[in-house]
Length: 348
Ligand code: FES
Ligand SMILES: [Fe+2]
Image (cartoon, rainbow, N blue to C red; front, side, top):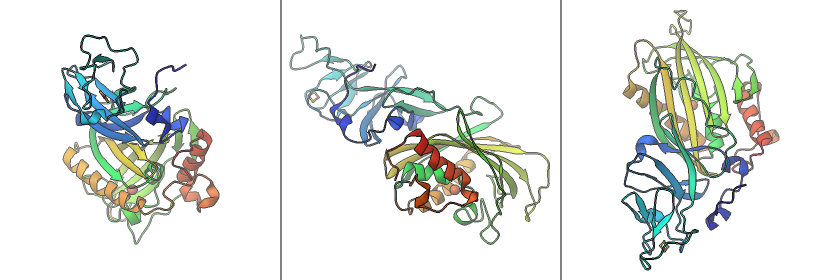
């Protein structure tokens, strides 16, 4: 049983155990330099992140247990966080080491910062507000040296996190939202039936075939076969196998390239999310990281603009509230899966 003291502010904001006991990306590893405090919000909870001089990252509630001042307004001194109100100091364990008004006294046992689990993986900082019963999802290409990794984002969507994920696992918007890049408006792909199965690592689709006039950083036409995977409510992935094609969409080679994308969402609240991604590419000749990142900026900003228009902001998980077609199978299953997992926060 978790007997750790909980912050009083925990009573506000998200109460959904599915999300509280999950891992969430709250930044890129490179975002956090030693010696500084970084405020952020996850699921309506105000937090601070800081890195100590040994390289360890800490995520705490943005709250001093003494009188509730925001630690983010304080500073880091000698690997300790100093509260800006009465100067209490907290070490890397979150333990108060000094109350300046009573410097000779040992601070009481309860004088602790509210600390959370944190792990760095795939160039992201992951944290949990609770007790996750599962590990962080596996990014299959991360340890494969044949793949070049390119991070991009953050993309701030003024939109619900699940709406952002659903957009990421949707193949029928390409000709309209990404016209000229991932699809052709005047000649949209006819989607052949595909399947979606529930696996131990989440929902996974079979391959979905589309034509892309500029399918990657090379700016050449490809036939793309997408396999979508929703690992967690706010973490998804696709693996895109491509074959170079002519302008009509006929493959000109048997050789496949692989382009995968690991997609993470920080749900700031139920109507704002921060998307961070990492692409992994095994394409010859080797991809240019900067061009790949620039292309991701274009594509994800196009997505952001449309997702921000969706109403209601909270995603409906009862299928009767919107209209579903067989070509939306992945999104449809995603919504039902959220409902089956018992997700209650941010859904309609
Ligand atoms: S509120 Fe932080 S030291 Fe008093
Ligand atoms: Fe898109």
